[in-house]
Image 1 (cartoon, helix red, strand yellow):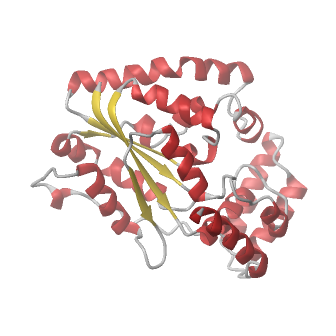
Image 2 (cartoon, rainbow, N blue to C red):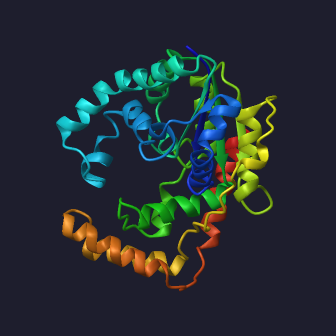
Amino acid sequence: MLPTLYLHIGTPKSGTTSVQDFVHDNRTILKTDFHLWAPECLVFKRNWELACYSAYPENSNYYLNTLHCFSRSELEAHCLSYPQQFGRIISEIERDDPNASVFASSEYLYSQCESDRHLVRLHSLLSRHFKRIELVFTFRDQKAYIRSAYAQLVKGPRAYTESFDMFLASVNTKSRYDYQYRLRKWRAAFPDSPVHQIQVGKGYVNGSELQKALLSIVTGDKKSHNLDKLRFPQRVSNRSPAYNNLCLMRYINRTVGNRFRISRLLRKALVKSLGAIPLGGHYPTAKLDKVTRQLSSSGKG
């Protein structure tokens, strides 16, 4: 077993890609100086696999009918074989560096691992290979999170068509949009794991500040003479589209759809072009404020 896994769970638009870029760009120094390994399959291109396995089969529709990236038999085969694949990756790291710790990062862990069963399955897999698991959450304030989640549904592969008011009707306590509730579920499933929380956004940390906050968690008391060699990539801000842009994107989603390959490609091109046009607009505030207050009250309970 390896000493420690640092498991980064990113909520929507909370700097997850910034964290992944930093770890990916500095993976050599992190490995040699800090004995911290960040396998590409757990941080970058294939970081969806851990969540895909943990939430299967409840998440099948996302891969089969939203992303269209698997047949049903392929998805089943992938999830059945994943524990062995994961074990081989960790065994190779342990063979090369028995003192290594591992960093994993995925936004899919938050969006897909919703039930107790998903989290228990995830914990069961990880605890076979690591003596200690530390959870790292990056999150935005509740109101910004709801806006970002809606924008991601509209512009993302789900091709969401409902209005913001209709979306708010589905946002309630003990749902995926209730951050504090979800955090309590993770704590219950990982009872022996320290939980680190980093709030992202105006007045908190952003960009390189987020990357440095993460670095202080994963390096602990270790010292390095090569901190000056670390690169802190300045990523272009990945802001959500303005409200009026989202309204037009919903119209595209309704008319073009996302069912067939040609419609998916056309929709993707139209949405990307539309996202570059500054149309402005404001989210309806009264209902958003009401929902935010309800979720905040839930977090205090």
